Image (cartoon, rainbow, N blue to C red; front, side):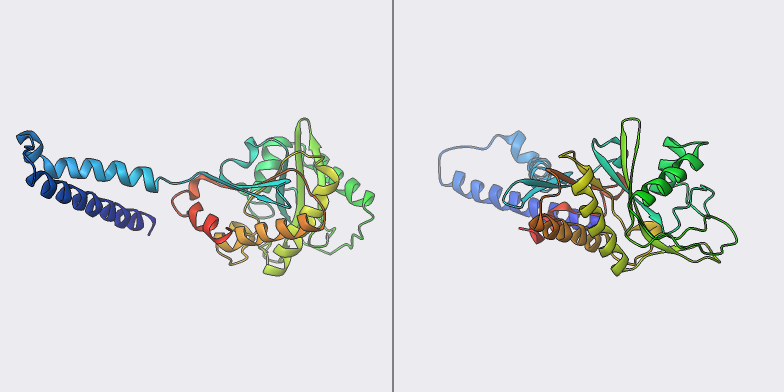
Length: 275
């Protein structure tokens, strides 16, 4: 669909250029000027080249858009990129048990949760879990125990946010997904997404200290909310505006979209809907 839309835009550019050329040809016919033979013989080729340049300049894909919220004090950016290369705090969605076993059953290897454990706590996942419990106790979070066949037994409320720093890396882990204790399948809902994003913003007020807050597409992929990427982005933006109106969160909030979605998501659509 993306490439079809771009082809239609190119056709419009081509016919626009052809129209201009025809108008110039008519105008030149009324004068004593003469179009060089080399141009007349290659008029179609020139039209294609000019229309392609015109299309590219007017329709090349944006990789980042930025808007100001809360009386221009907070910069909100939606961009394609790698979450882990961003500076500041990075939000990572986890299941309600904060499982730490990356085996594609409890935690998927390709999920952001799995990548964090594999890259930053490799062979030290239990230390990560101990830090999670320590931070939860500091927040006086009630932690009921559930009898599971495998995985962690302590169940965290949806929307629990646990800040953990590892060397120069800063993460906000948020319990986003429910877990089927039999199949281990994680799933989220619109309600859990709203709660989780809102809690992330509230927690970010306390920990960011003016550092950037980087949020991935929470609720997409393995979280299985069933929502389109555009709807998820709209929810994240909406709650950023609402929470910032109540009280400032941080100076810079970034919504990070994976680069492999560049051909599926048009940032112009998002920009126009939030003008």
